[in-house]
Length: 151
Image (cartoon, rainbow, N blue to C red):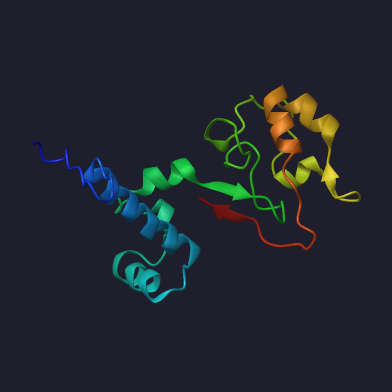
């Protein structure tokens, strides 16, 4: 049996290295969610207090986390339309359409602030059909909150 061909009958793990990576990714997610925890502060003090977890190069799980991270739209003024992952159910949660509208930078640029709804015409002329449809289904919170990463 090879080194990574581990099968645990009780738990069903088929690859110990992937399981270990998933556990490390979970720890990375906790560091992102709780940046003021004792562990997060200790690691920052030891390695680099100026850099956040996703920009650190010390963890092998960074790529796995980045694959599954997506912004939950709340305040809408923090998430970049073209660079950030924010649209559920599209490839990598990112807009794939080439920039057709140079005036759009933040998700807030796609929202009518008076009605608290999407600017449907702008979405349909800027994105492809699937991206526009998926965007239109993203709900808005009743109370203003900060945009936040989900995994």
